[in-house]
View 1 (cartoon, rainbow, N blue to C red):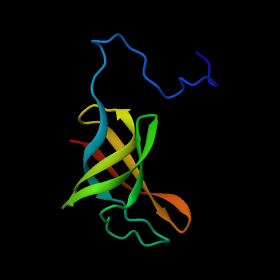
View 2: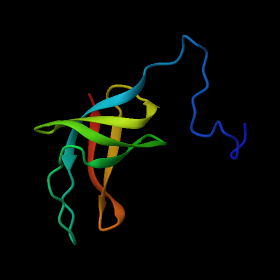
View 3: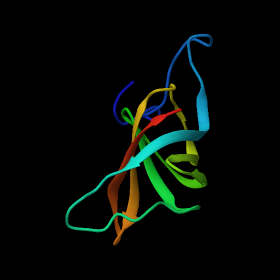
Length: 104
């Protein structure tokens, strides 16, 4: 496999060794307080970019309660419970890091 083939970002494993591949993630998150711009509370159906380890996908918030959210992904990711994630949101035509969390 090389950097330019179609398997970039994909998982290769024996059938029984692979864990769960998820289209929806439940995340316990915390907003980041940043100087220089406002970071408002998250909203339902807001598009987000999620980064788990080296994998990245885009999705939208389908459920939001307190500091927990459910994110429906456009492209499934392999995740493990307890993995740390970074969440970015669209602000002024750019994706900005706005929260971090743990997959629950």
